[in-house]
Amino acid sequence: MKKNKLNYMAKFALVASLPVVMFSSCKKDDVVVKQPEPVKTTGTVTTVSGLGTSGFANGSAISALFSYPTGITFDAAGNLLVADQGNNQIRKIVTTTNATTGVVTVTASTLSGTLASGSSNATAIGTIASYNNPSGVVYDPISNSVFVADFGNQLIRKIASNGAVATYAGVSGNAGNNNDVIPASGKASAINPRFSNPAGVAVDATGNLYVADFGNNRIRKISTTGVITTLAGSTAGNVDATGTAAKFNGPRSIAIDAAGNVYVADANNNVIREITTAGVVTTFAGSGAIGNADGTGTAASFNHPAGVAVDAAGNVYVADTNNNLIRKITPAGVVTSLAGSGYLSLITPFNAPVAIAVDAAGTIVYVASSLGNNIQKVK
Image (spheres, rainbow, N blue to C red):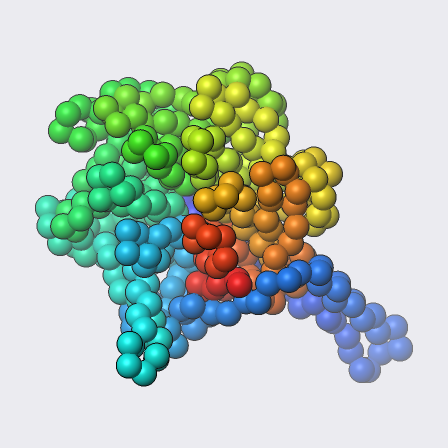
C-alpha cells in the first residue's frame, strides 16, 4: 500500500482478503460462515479492459494491466481516461469497431506519466511527466485539456491537447487549504494556493473547475479566470448548511449536472451531498448509517461511496465502494441498485469500485474497480 493512497482502502484490502467460508473437516466444532445473499440488481457487468491482477501493460483488453485505478472519465471522442493510481499514470482506453467485419477492438495506452512517482512537468511529451498517486481525472471540452487530481503531490495538473503537462494549482509536496489567484501564466504562486490530498475533479458547462479536497473536507472552485475559492466545507463533520458552515468527511469525488449543481461522494459520512450554485449543501441521499438499502433520500444507505457521475437527464450514479455496488439515484432522490453484491466481503463482480462514468444517455456505466485492477461496464 503506497504511502499517499486514499487511506480508507487499507481497511478494505484487509477485510476483502479474508476468506468468506472457513471450515475444517477434521474437527467436530467446525463453523461454516455463510456468504451473504447478493442484493437484487438489474444490470449486466462485463470487463472492458484489464486482467484483474495488479501490474502495468498497455495493449488489448485481454492483455492490459492496471494497478489500483481510481478515476475515470470520457474525452471528446468518447475514449475512456483512467487515473491509474498505482502506476502513477493517466491511461487511455480506445474502443473501435471495424466497419466491414463488425469486430470490436479495445486498446489501452499511456496518455501521460511515467511509472515512477514524481512531480515533473513536460513541455510536449506527456509520458515523461510524473505524478504521485493521481486519483481523479476530468476532460474539459472548453480548453480541450485534461485536469488531474494529483493526490500525493497536493496538486492539480493540466494536460494540454499536445500532451504538455503543467502544474495548474497547488504547491508540490505542501499541503494546506489556502485560496488564491492563479497567475496568468497558469502556474501556482510561490506559496499559494494549497490543497490537502485532492481526490476528485469536475468541470461545469462554462469551464470552472471543482476539486474534492479530501484532506481539507472542502469542495474548492477554480474559476476560468484562476480565482480559487471554497465553495463549501470546513472541518470534518456532517452538517448541511451554506458555504463554509457546511461540513463533509472525506469528500472523495464530485460531479456536476447541467444546472451547475455539484454532487459529492461524501465517503466517510456514507452519504451523497448536493451543493447548489449558491453553495447551499443538503443531503441528497443516504442516512449516514452503513448499509445497502434502496429507498428515497435519507431512507437509503451506503457504505463508503467513493465515485459519483451524472447523466444528461440528471440521474446520479454512485460507486458504493465498500458495498461493491453500483447505485442509481433519480433526480427525485430514489435510490436503486444496478449491479454488484451489496457486501464488503462479497467481491464478485466488483472489488472496491471507486470511480464511475456514465454516457450521456445513461445507458452504459463504466466503473474503475480499484482492487479488481480493471475497468468494467454495466448495461
